[in-house]
Image (cartoon, rainbow, N blue to C red; front, side, top):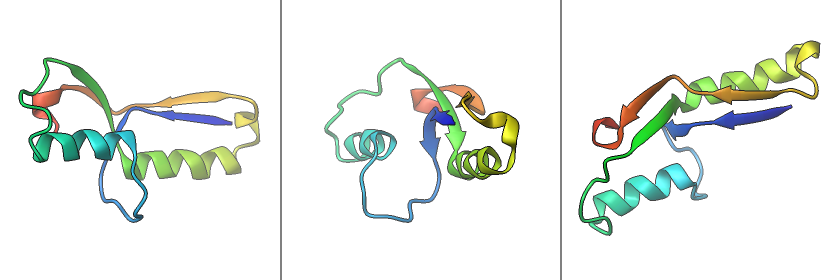
Length: 79
């Protein structure tokens, strides 16, 4: 099973960095001076976790890919 999440938003429980976390850090620290006019396919971290659990419990999920996205937001709406 391959789980392919969009821009993942939600509580961080580990110390490891991710692309989603890095983008927000760059914005907050001023490393990105302007918010780019870019659409993000967003998903809550809980939905990604639920997809992982379901992929283990549903036999038909074997050898499949699942794109996990809740909605599209412009980058300046991701808060």
